Length: 267
Image: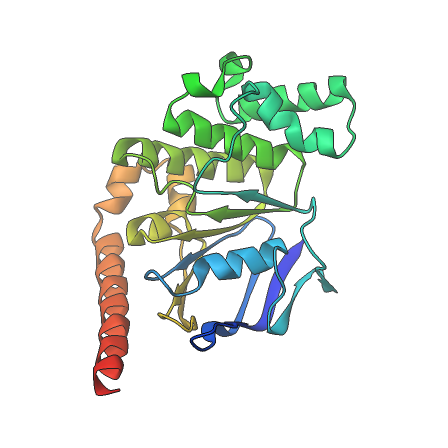
């Protein structure tokens, strides 16, 4: 079982007005077949944490490892899905999905075959040759997901991938993401501002405080697996257990924000 682990990581950004302490002593682990979701208000360091796990930058303190080995930068063992789909409009859907394979010097026939497989996985097999500007927002996000999966990473790192979608499309995409997770067994780390989305998707939810980001709560959840076992999403999200957990998390987030605001007023 592959493991992507964050060990006591802190991140401080130098600034002419004083250093910005984005993360403080954060530790977590993402294993194959698990979805770890980081939840927190704006400014809690979620995107910074994901960028460190992707290898886009190095932490000020601490270490990030894959199967015990420190990461030195971006790698094919981690696929990244951004909130902005970052697709190339001059390429069609199939070519966008195959782009990462092209960078790996994969032969044309093999990369197009794999691209077709990934498009089928996200239910877009019939749109392989369509232009990107012919796609809806949800379809574009599915292409971004297929592109990340095409290089066969061990882990998916997802930065608010559904945040720009309308509510109905977002719920459909949540179900699709769980289906892809079930079929591939990838380890997924996802960040979101949505409490409902975090509860529904996570096998483990971690709650981060406002800056500097610290993990204040960890919750093991089974809503995702219940949905994959056949329970409708609306039934889960309207259930008393789900609603109670949502309200508890909302109270925690508001309490943390009030604490920060009170500290600023006292200063």
